[in-house]
Image (cartoon, rainbow, N blue to C red):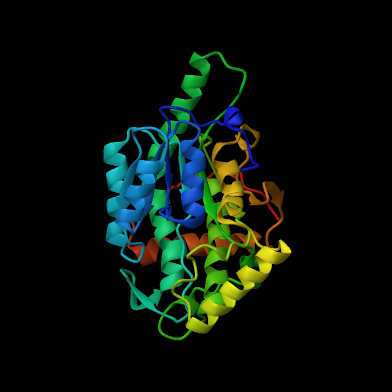
Length: 329
């Protein structure tokens, strides 16, 4: 880990961080990095044995594993409800869970008769739902953090709670097409994945505008790490190609290990250096400019409204603030 040292961490004993999709790969490395600060880490995934094994490995005694399938929105709601019931604070949410599907598969969505592409449902809609369901707890925790800092008479300044969403530079290949994620016809593989990762950036920018000042929201490119299980549901040919790319990449130094890929989201989750930064896209722990499509305000709003409608949410169940804290094009 070459990011912020533990001494530079805003996370500490008594704090709580939720890392989705953290039973293996980049998510597990992120969980290890956040646990090293002394914080309680909530591990999430579908593989209970792997999740419980990671919890047992982490330093400290209060870590927990929660199972939830991101293709089932009732389970996503259940995950949020369990975290809210079991923890009285949430200092950081790392939206790391994601999937890459070789074939187009549909997921039932309450507001859509013909279903939605699984990649989009998992990578965006489930993330949208979980984040909004936990937003109030994050906001209250951010206010609590400010009170705690005042009580300690520190000079560290503002220290909001944080939302970190893992996107990908593949978002640069996409333009928002919400009609294209509905029904059996539409892109799959890299096309569907890139589109879902653009949705992550658009969502982050709109979320940053809506959140109160007690919470920040940023997103990042995690690097290229063929060692993760992201493409396990791709085609056989694509899987073999990805493995070959990983082997060549390791020899040439052009790919990242899972630990290296976890650095930027770890940095965004725990570093003092980005305590008040919000509405930005990061790569290798630096702010970089994402695709121009990410700055389309109409697309940001349309994605938000459509996500609310498709998930059958009440407006009172989502962040409604009108702040203008995210960057403009």
